[in-house]
Length: 278
Image: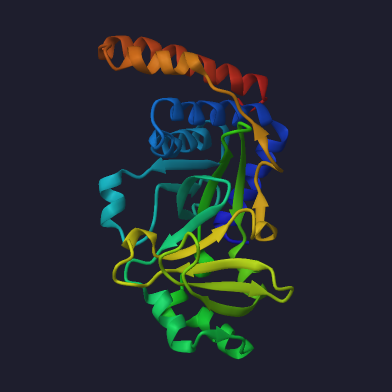
């Protein structure tokens, strides 16, 4: 079990025992969509990092600043340290709707180029096994993506973790599929022995957006290759008081912020006591 897998297993255990903690956090995160359609994504990074620090006593989390993130080769929004083993690992946090999910970017299109060189249909078992050893796919098994998958109409969220190791072992066929109704560029799609969708490598053309190239999957079509840290969907609700708090905080002084922060810290401590985490 990798350090990241150990972490997600512990996260699942915490949520199963104290579902109200993650429900409160998710409600606050997705309330941010009332402020802006993309606001929740950045604030989710801060929220989940603090959730780990406050409620997962043997883990420490550090939110990585955007400037630092852009300067790094790897994708990283949060750095997590296991306080017991001292293992450190990066995590990329995603807040996506239920459907297509980007697992990693491929700015230089090396994955697409590698597959293109192997042909339009790849079914050779030895060739597929060799693919995982190629430098272009070297990071496939090390994908530490924590996706908060939300269904806004039904106001529910599912924290779905892609099982890259199991997906890699299941792939038996890779097919180049041309432009589709909603696609401008071809993709290589990966299928398992049952003919079910696993994941895909998108684009590769020079006209494609560099941030959209890379490894993608689909939370509906590839559901069997996900593990739910929340054991299924969790209903959330909008916290309108939080919106008012933000609006007032933006025009208040640091003195007011300090006073509010003390009250918020006390509330968190009370949650810990109710959950026997103190």
